[in-house]
Image (tube, rainbow over all chains, first blue to last red; front, side, top):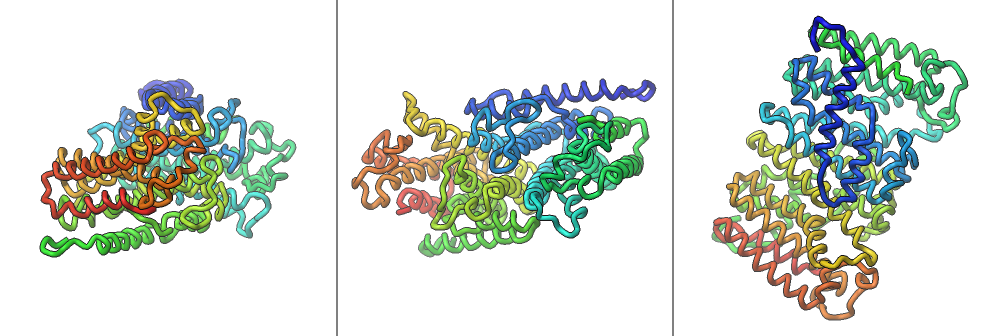
Length: 306
Length: 306
């Protein structure tokens, strides 16, 4: 972004989404068995917000102009992992959802066996994409670290572990320290991947170890804010109309931020997280105009209507 | 192994299995959520042949005495991937098996949701194990290559893709070129992981590019032989009693080597593969006494009673 012109966030998001979508289409273009690749493409190339990929690219670019280009394979890998998590979560053994973003879920189109295997294949393709497509200019030890951190953020200590606890605490088994438990679930189910996104983008761009910590923490904050917003949207349907009929999640006995803290305290928490996110970015020592995309993404995570 | 003493294969297998089991127990020792790690341990630490891990260690040691020590994390990662493939294959959406090696399958003990997520977590733990535990003496670009090749061997182009085609061609949809199709399925479902095992062991031990090709091919041959032996065992129950009652696989319309080629030609194919395997090993230029463990493993793959 050019320092002297006003930052156009909508234009920024549109252009970066196009970049990510074009590379995802390339990484998923060919392959046999055809049925398997078709089902992988069905979920990955379905239009999405691409927030995690944008976080990765924006973090790279905040550290160094044009560094987002070396982060593209990693940004795409994150979207593959995210798509995979939706495929497996939608399966009958988990959430048993038939519709995702207005389209039939993967297993409804390709069958349960293929959907399960497509998820497995996407986990592996994500790793291959980072290993094989990250430019040779990036030190191999950094690429290895990126892969290892993505595996950690995705696996038992991260997203998958959060999902296991989410299942364990749904349906009435309410623990005594319920806000701590929910915080931990949100941090792993959502926060671990958003924190990886911002950390990896900055690391690939050559940030210092201290900066990397701040980027990681910013991603955690954003992930938690994203998830609390989700909990609010589940109640209100629209964040602008908060305070209307409390919703169906409470009936289902699902642990959510709103069910524990109520709407007002949840909204107050989002305001706190926004400030904490801004302060964390400031600590990187990067000039403010280079951080505007990340600040806008935090805003988007909190203020999106859906 | 010491050149002047007779090679004791049983002792070799027992000691290497113990080494692999001890490291697997270490890599899977701790973790939260407890339920998830318990289900991961249930499948990975269940007693097994560990043939893939032994192939990796024996290949490393064939290239360089004591090099199997640097290959331990990779050998363990292969066993995690193998265990994961059994967990997902046993799920109701795929083979719907209740019993595996005389014990209830993972989802029978931990539920379908946990079993599915334990498989996902094991895929990630395999990658982390290689990235974080391979000794620093190994060049990071080789470690990265090992991870990328394992992801390829496991994913859509390898094991997972073979599984998708196996499902597609089971139940009567017999293609015209059925032996080619079955060869391709066996090569991907079984051969891609055994080929990775021998290739990776040799690569981590510092073999030349040409040697790596021979090790890879040897692993493919062994994997195919292993799978044809499986097809024979499905018919006879015991390879020593071949020629008795032809079996249940034919009834289930499953594409197997025996159903296409018959018992005699399948046995002859195993003899051919054994010779091809021995010739391939000889091409590495490694002295014969250092290859005896690999030759014995080929023998074991073919002559095992189960």
